[in-house]
Image (cartoon, rainbow, N blue to C red; front, side):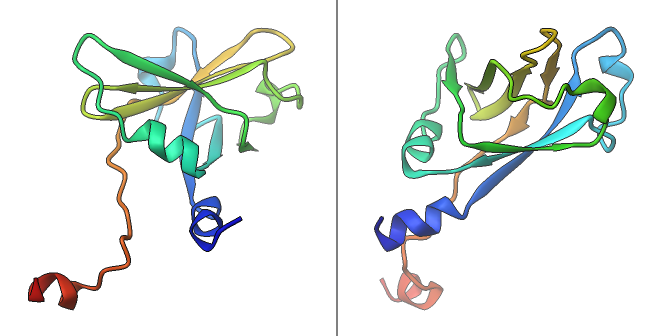
Length: 129
């Protein structure tokens, strides 16, 4: 693994998850049911750099993540069947998590997302060019 890949492997996207039910609109954004931490590897970052059109939505299936459970009664403790990251125009992203045991779904709010890259150029070098 190159040094660049190792740096990317330490980058994590943390997204709050809420159970998808009739009370979703009334939920406090500061009190999620879980937080999903998605490892940002080089391939995923390349996919996230897309900016879909207004009619387009890109779905990425995620396997490299950790789940921080806050409301333990809602999670069976097994990995889900599917974790999807949805990218739409903006770009903005959201996560859909489907529970393996009982098909309960958890969603994240739609978040504005603009990847930032460290090109190894200092501010001084930018000013000089």
